[in-house]
Length: 241
Image 1 (cartoon, rainbow, N blue to C red):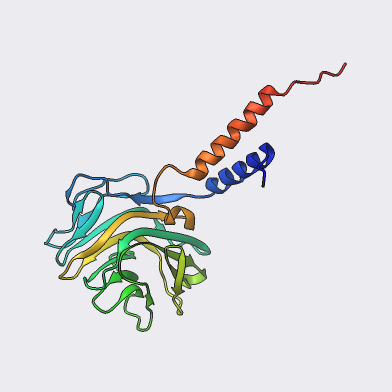
Image 2 (image 1 turned 90 degrees about the vertical axis):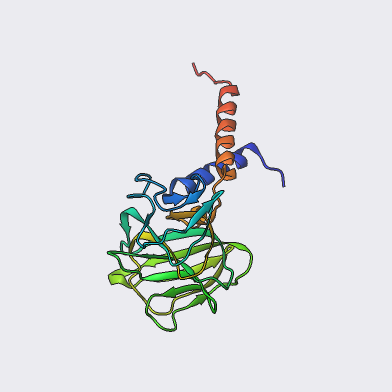
């Protein structure tokens, strides 16, 4: 199919319009110097502070943008704003290797509490609600995958989560819970943290699922606008007497 100038321009504007509604609430690409993650990061761009250990042991390490290691360690990073307004949706994306052997988790909550965990355990890999039996959403362990945890905030804390692996839904929780959160927490339990990269909290699935790089859709949009401006400048004006 031949892509005309008008069609290309229309697609470009649609692309830009879609991006205009997408908001990255906070992200951490772990582009710090190698070493202990404790103390890395600072306030700004959606974060209230950097990563802070809440345990005596600080062994969660950063190596070339990948977080791993640790032995019964917990690091917390607080968001500037609490997420959980009724009838909104928030997406948390991360690249992770769920190895089915270590015992580690990414979790959220408020006021020192945890409401859910995305964990790798010796008998389970996936999402579970804290202290709720039969609340698991399993994912397929082995290899590196992009995961997105979609949180749909309902009325009166009737919230639901859906877990995505490489763009494919793995299921949703069956019982409504309060999933509001103002922090993200990385935690290990006497073993090693599953390698974690590219942590993003966003208002759209596309933003959370993307591994940050120069956006092809943004380039498409800019190219389309340039084409429109070029055609306008080259189009002669018809003067009416």
